Image (tube, rainbow, N blue to C red; front, side, top):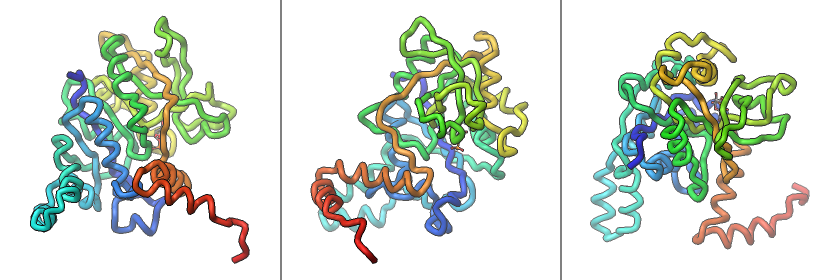
Amino acid sequence: MSAVHTAVIPAAGLGTRFLPATKAMPKEMLPVVDKPAIQFVVEEAVAAGMDDVLFITSRGKRALEDHFDRNTDLEVALAEKNDSDRLALTQESTDLARVHYVRQGQALGLGHAVLMAENHVGDRPFAVLLGDDLIDARDPILPKMIEVREKHGGSVICLMRVPREDISLYGCAAVEETTDDDVLRVVDLIEKPPVEQAPSDLAIIGRYVLDPAVFDVLHRTQPGRGGEIQLTDALLELASMPAEQGGGVHGVVFDGRRYDTGDKLSYLKAVIRLATEREDIGPDLRTWIAEQDYGRAP
Ligand code: G1P
């Protein structure tokens, strides 16, 4: 049984990068082929042993709440038709975990969103999963992160090497090696640094295992990059705190398959990649893509 039971999933963002699609629909509900992106994230948490999910939401996220609730009208209609396959698809998201919601009344940043989880989480370690990052189910990283937390205590972040010119899209970590080959000690963190100020090419990606000490730190974290309360800044303070106070931050490097659904182009690439791998539609889609003549005059 995993020592981390609660997955906190911030889902309060306005999704302005996907307007007009997200005018009346949460961006988390955008489908990746036929499943809302956010369901992949919940499935990943459940696969890593978590049974308690807390969404940090905001106004206009009703469709997300409905998705993880039962839809009895639909269930009855499908049962009457003996359509057990579609009935199972309808029930899939309901049975995954105990799901809770708390609202972030003001968009004050990721650190502030995580702080909204304080009452629910209490004094246990917990995971944070950001919905814009999809980690391929074949390359799980959370179990490794939980293992590192159990061994070293403190908090654990997930790092990925990115091309230098992309580092300013992410939090960036400076690290030292440890006696464990695949575990790094985090010594500095900068949220979205200009390329020339980045201490490394190690980007923070959206998976965290956090010590509850993060809440006290977040209470005093001042607005940082973009005027927002940044989780990265709180983690930097945790990194220099003693272990007895819940301090210490380690990093694991992820080199598996990750899909970014945070902007239009990356989202489309994620959908196409996952669609081409599907048994049902993949072969036809691949053939169709190969046949396209992109240079054709309009
Ligand atoms: C957040 C974090 C950033 C991290 C990124 C990963 O930024 O603040 O440190 O690298 O998620 O996706 P956001 O992309 O929400 O602006």
